[in-house]
Image (cartoon, rainbow, N blue to C red; front, side, top):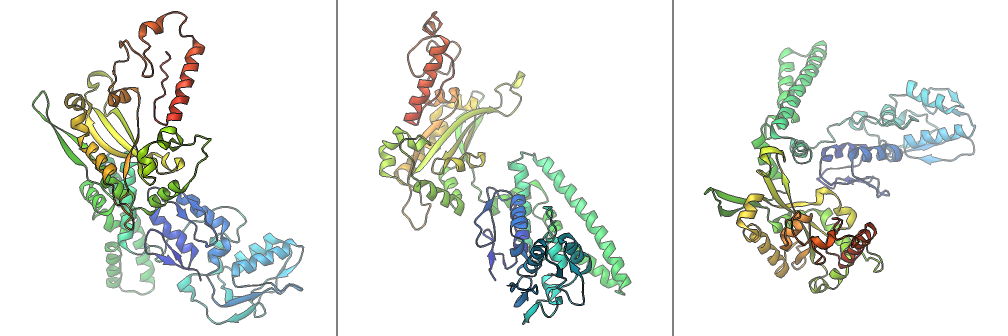
Length: 525
């Protein structure tokens, strides 16, 4: 039997169905690709639902072939010597004979039915042999029986095959029943629940009060459902003659050991306990508070900086990030086609990147945004300057996702204008200098990898701010970053027609593409 190993934890199993069920625990892991467990299949899926559909539709035989060990089935159709070890595969083979216009007999013991229609054979198996195992087949079909797993241990019956969708000709996906084999411990379940709550907070941007309401309502619904189930269990045990004290003890034990109850009444019970769990259990990088000074109202002002070196170390702890980095640095692009920023002349002639081909290629992005209503009395009052970064060390289709963009710095825009760029960007510039001169040890077996800023991108206002250009676009005399055309010239009749404006803009785009770093203006001058 092939042992299937989870790539995120220590769980392993020989059952493809159990392996598929187990990955439900990891369905909220960010940017995780679910690998198909079948050895000869190399497909990966971004969503758990797609992964489950693939397994149940494309690997029916593999999913059930584990059920019976050391049992061989021999086809009894004349002139056919087909032999296999999977009950599901054997029954599917018999269906193929029916499709070949042959009449086959039911292979189970004490059953003399014959069938020439596939749907009739399928219905007969479902109605009459749902609870039969592979050893219930006739002696002529069974070749050898050395060992058979107990049905209670493997739960491998024809009914299990039916619920797996093998005999059903439709593409309807069965519901997965999570058994004790699928979830190993409470800690792993806690990790899965924490990822779900973190997803609500970070991806869906739900406030803490809303998440708290969801936690409390889910706990209440869970308790009600558990109470109903325990009542049914209590009635059944009473009918079987179990004493009330034993029933009460069992109910108490089930309630106290409920994994969901332990999570929502433990480390997931409040916003503070959840945040503490996130920091200790996930790759969390603590922000550094940068003191800027006192403003005009004599109030201490700060900027929040997420150290770029610590962020890189946290990112490269993930094996998928390492493999994406290696893949990008191994890829060779066509020199005649501009596919990426690294195909530009500025990158290819840059001495630092030429001498350090494995260096990190950092792309910075700076912009300001309003956290409150941008209109009315609150305009610009709560405007925040943000700096992000991404790495050009990944292929374009990897880094095009928003999840790959990392936050670097946050500062109030009024404080940025009051204290200046040097005060706000000092820590960031210092770390960038260290990356360029010393490097960072991302791979333990290699020497430190150096890095440098490849490009700084942003909108017109942010780009003018970083470049030291005039940030006034309404009354400034000069209106273009690429030439010295002034406003008066632009307004002179006949100088700039619609066609010349379009030609000029296209020319700027091609020039900046060849340089790999630049700006494309659509101001219409």
